Image (cartoon, rainbow, N blue to C red):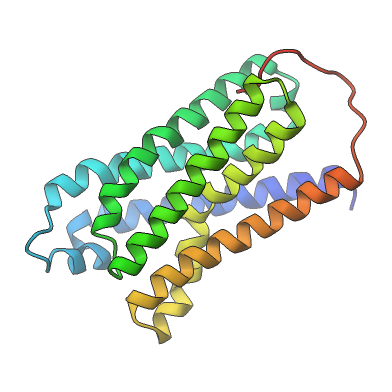
Length: 220
């Protein structure tokens, strides 16, 4: 299998997983009503928990996170790279969606399942999200395209924790209390995603691709 076939297979798999994630979100939080979700039922036991206020942050968080997830793989395709205007527009949408989302995470983290340990884990995730995305944007405005790509890949690795966390937390929840299972799943999701991205970045540095065309315009 050549590199192009591998790339198409990887992108197809990523969009398939994103599709499954959307189905999960729809069934868990929209079809049955957010109040029926086990995660939310646990929060409602806390007298200080405001379901109405939580919804105002949670729904935009899910929507913006999904937008970021969906844009990421397409930005890696040749079709996107061959259309600088489209690439730049989608890059801006990606970054803005994340920066708005970052403002919502602290509030949602306060009522995170698993208590203070999970709250801290999500705040760490949020800081990494801010750092990697900001660096990606800065490198783009500086027209340092190679560095921009490396940082945006790291940003997308953090964005993908949206999915990884929900997969990893399942086995841990079977054997551990949520106060341990949730923080472990967050940190493990971060570690797994960044491991693959850093391996790809090192591989690209070791075997650089021949640049067919360059651009002086920022891509985000």
